Length: 113
Length: 113
Image (cartoon, rainbow over all chains, first blue to last red; front, side, top):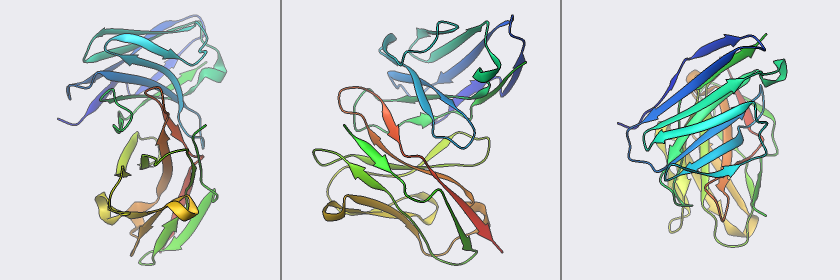
């Protein structure tokens, strides 16, 4: 199984809503990532978890809250988002070594209204 | 700091023609290098990776890339392009000291019949 599964595929939320994005992998990877991608831009790293501990937070606003309940799951909790947060949110996983390539999910297309 | 540059924002080729996408890297030591492809609204898929050894790397979907240290380049090639190759292509390098991938700006490939 070389898949990273993200749910939901599409999400529309209001600025006062609370929602969560979910990501799951069963490749035994111990590093998991959240990226944000705006149209016609490369992915921007948001968070990295290594061995279920947050190791990188790229100065992401607190309205985004990551969680790694176990080695297979990664969540991104969303609260009080702004319209400019609308984007494709990508989850990825890899072995926790520099040479390891990341495997990406299909993404969640988020629209904030 | 490590970085990759993709000088071409977009490229158009005819179906059946050959393709070369350019990537230049900035890296102190021998780099690890990746090429990813992203179809519209989808996640990223690894095409190929270079770690060391043979400078010509074979990937999936008929793609190959050649590492040239003297030119600091890692260009992606395909001898005959298919309409399904139309997508965004990202060159990438891992960030030393953390589990993080640094992406180039991307090259959008258009394929004309």
